[in-house]
Image (tube, rainbow, N blue to C red; front, side, top):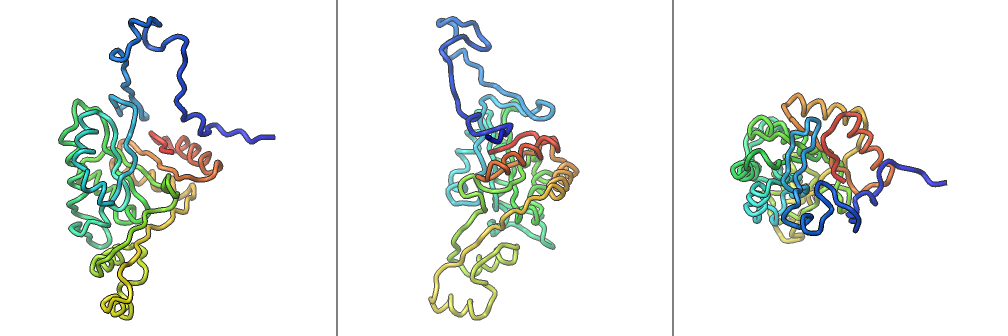
Length: 265
């Protein structure tokens, strides 16, 4: 016997046909490339409109993302497609202001959201703010909704690449200590006096910053969905990781049960 799941990865393959046409007459002179309309509308109220049916997935705190954000944000906004701000952007921003463990001001996240919204046209496209465990504890999504006017948020279970969280090397002691104070797992402990002395004398040259692994339960998931809705999120997405088929089924079930607007696989 084979277990049957409502969705499998074959559903994501693009397969055409040589017979007929959809949305236009099946005529070789009419069904031509310039006549194709790829606009889509989705979400619980069909209120998210894209000119092209794709989203750039979560691009977070890496230098590659930061240094190329103008092209990504402006290009996506003008094209009317989606762009997701990935994990750890607030936590890695040395100019972010954290008060009592919650973010109250930023430079990097504000810039990223602002660049997209400034170039958005006629309501097409969406800028999506993703959050992992550390982002959630910092209140990143609430800040983005209330202070930056973000309408779409994405809850994150894990990465598609390695299904855990972001990992970076930190070569600056002060930055390692800042990240530790902001709640990240930093190894070795940059506040330990013996570690500090060892680093300063060159015994090692870099720290590791790890994001925590999400532990999903239906109760905590439902609670978080309610929290971001109460904060003012109009649309809520879920990003699942490269997990087992049972977890994909769980993601589909939770996204359906709690009326999410998109599931990112």
